[in-house]
Image (cartoon, rainbow, N blue to C red; front, side):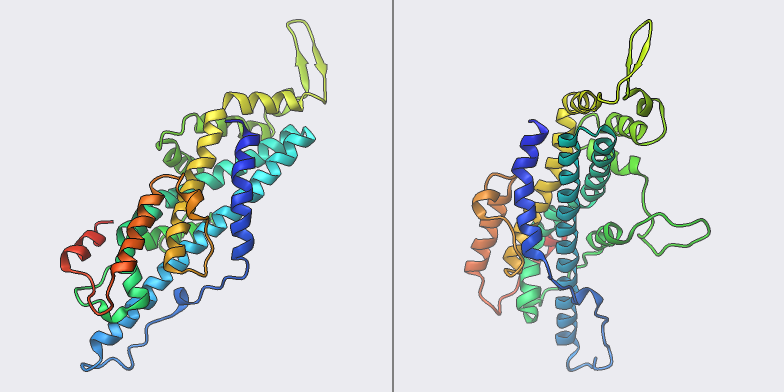
Amino acid sequence: MEFKTIDKIYRPLIEHIVRESNGIKYYDMFLEPDFSELNADKAVEILQQLQSVYVRGIIERSHMACVTTLARTSRWLSSITHSVEDGNALSFASSLRGLLESSADSFHLMKHLHPSLASSFKYIYIALNYPKDLKNGLLNFESLENLLIHYAYAKHWKRGEQPPLHHQNKSNTEYIKCLESFDVPGLSDLYSELCQLTHPASPSVFCFIDETDNDLTFNPNRDSLVINDILDRYKSSILGMIQYPLNSVLMALALIHRLVPEWPAMSDEVMSKIGNSAQTLSDFDKFYNEYKPGTGLSYAELRLASNR
């Protein structure tokens, strides 16, 4: 699939969600438990309420990760498109490299997010809406929470600084290999080429030179040749690095929309064409329509949800 086609398919979808999500505030992830009112008579009820807030915080972090991924991707796609239209090879390489790094960073989380939500949506729904029905135990979302914290707060720290747990970034190579291992070929080679164009290296010189065995000729109009060559040779790599993270985000958002209807997502018609989203949404709707408040989950269902 050509880059222009990918951009034409995805960017309107993600920009719609970004616009509709403008102004959404997240509160519960900042709340701290208050144990001052904890006593034997109300212990269970208070713990259930605390779990409801905790789960809401997980959903807030998940939603924030999804919409910021969409916003970053939209900006990079726009920048790449303008660079192609302007015939600016260096700007193109910088923007495509930014998209690759951003996509790989997001996919480090997104490959886990939708599966985790899909296996736990019954519990999450009950925790958000009927916390008193949490009678057979409470779930811990620690592994997902750690990934969400890493996505939001990890960065490069100065020498001597001690970052909080999960705030230390991984190398770009680690993130890229995570996406590459998901059957997206050639990303490491593509990244290497883009780095050589955006850093002072030989390719950033010879992208302006026509070379033969006998002479070198300065040619400041070779940009389109360089751009089209990269787009052609790495067509499947570019498709995969855009498609896999975005599909994962859209699937997660579709399920989050079921849990928090005021937060926007793609229509069910669009989602029916992406992964196993249609089946997951159908399973949720069946549970939602059949659930009777006051029943809760069985121990077996709770164990199933905990195997995320």
